[in-house]
Image 1 (cartoon, rainbow, N blue to C red):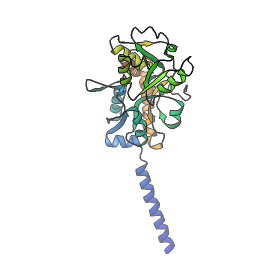
Image 2: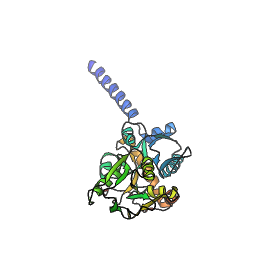
Image 3: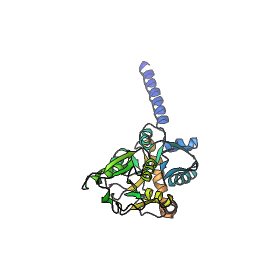
Image 4: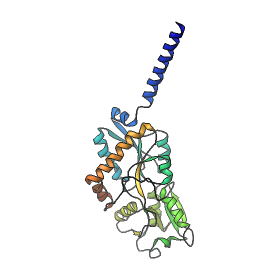
Length: 275
């Protein structure tokens, strides 16, 4: 009798534990659908992916996630932070996925789940219009160059600097907008950022800036970021499928053309990043 009661107690405990674990392990996609809200982390100083214009949140990220939200039947809730706070906040569970986007690197795919690429991310130089002292990337040797703090662009600039005759005076900024402001006032002679970003900035600043070609960085790509745990797998799978479907039916190309003025030939995945 005692043995039977003990077995019943053990079974009840196991059922309670299983129920508790099941509730805890309910995947993020299912939770978002049930709540009608998908929380997306981003920074809003990374035009043309994500930025504020006359008080309105705009960019490729906004257009993409609005389309994703409609397909899922959920509202997108944006959580805006400085870039160096975004990934720690993702790991802390403050939101479900990062719009970013971020350069797909070896270090990032080791730690995070990176989505299918949404654009090229190769790094190039932005200079003041008419600055004849910089006609090619190597001309930044020994000069003050701005770049985003805790970014892949910073890592590539530092790597490139080591190959030059004189190391670059690298100046890190929390916001690329601050770097562009210092470029305009002459505090730095150039800003290193991804080609899509600086092409957009040059276009928007009415001839104040020029892009220095070719890009000096390795061929890289931008993707969205999630965590690798099982709870987030179905959401990241869904996002990957959405990106690939939009690429195939031309919608992604239209977004690229809208925000960059050009389109990019991107792979469906980047299992072995350039750096």
